[in-house]
Image (cartoon, rainbow, N blue to C red):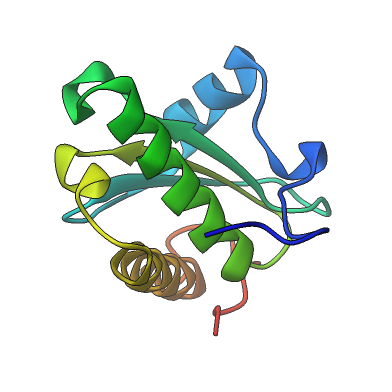
Length: 130
């Protein structure tokens, strides 16, 4: 899973401050899955950003870091439409899965997100990923 030049997440594509995470937790749409909980909040006209929460319940530091690398790579390959802040809250199963599995779940959660936003329950603005 070596990242080639330019294949990393830029600082503008990451949630960095605690206040940014708090905003997503407060106003974000929650989508539960077997590997992780995805929270998504709109942010108009800016690039999509990713934040990852990996608690000690996931396992040792090696397992948590591996899980974070998997999520970052899956996000990099399947970035949603601009204007979405995502927070991934990992479950223990995330650390034990492979990249293909994580990507598959992320794509499924992003499709559900696009369908929910398109359904009128929240402001629309995210295009369907694929």
